[in-house]
Length: 83
Image (cartoon, rainbow, N blue to C red; front, side):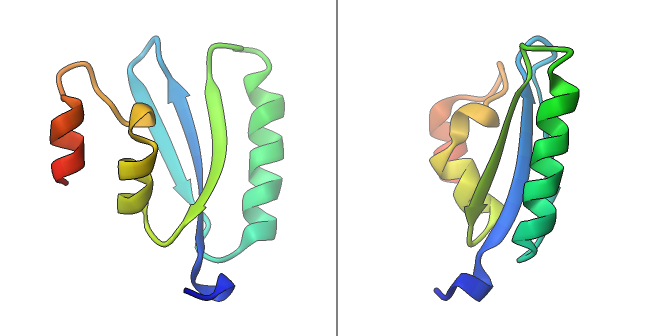
């Protein structure tokens, strides 16, 4: 996979709400990085939010490699791996 094929995702986990928000930036790393910096500033109000910028070939890959961001209380780890 070439660097031009890597997609960037801004992921915010709110553990209290058991909610994950995902924003995709395609291959535009500069836009993703700017959005990450803004999210970190905005999330300073709520330190319980966890925001990360992750790059991979697809969201499906990220859901497998970073499953803790997508785990719902009613979904098991095994179920996440099956997708």
